[in-house]
Image (cartoon, rainbow, N blue to C red; front, side):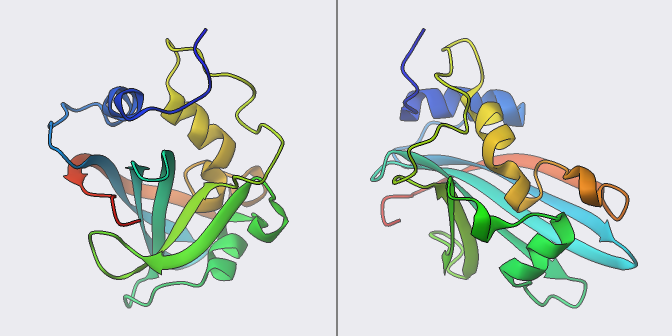
Length: 172
């Protein structure tokens, strides 16, 4: 069993498997991004999410944003209300509004709180398991990647697409 440390090589392997596409080797990083059109009550919402491996901080980060149909970015409390989550009560994660490293626009960045002593990942992730999938199970609900049973009837994905591109995360 391998230590529960995410190396860049493991990230590339696991995100490639997760995105189900071939990877491109570059001197930068690798990103898997997803766009989803979601429905909440009578509203259509666009969810953008991107996983990035931050080489400088040696961690997986999830960059995400939800947009109203008119293009207005939603506030994190609006997103939490839609998803039925309470990120302010989840000590295992940090969510902060930051400038996206490649898009240059405000996005929410979610990552494991380095000061949190618990292990929401459920222990070490064996090398044969997909680290990214385990990470999504532990932290993805806050960004709409894991359906919350409380809101299952009012929040649903209608259409999504996954693809992969390369991007630098050196400045993050």
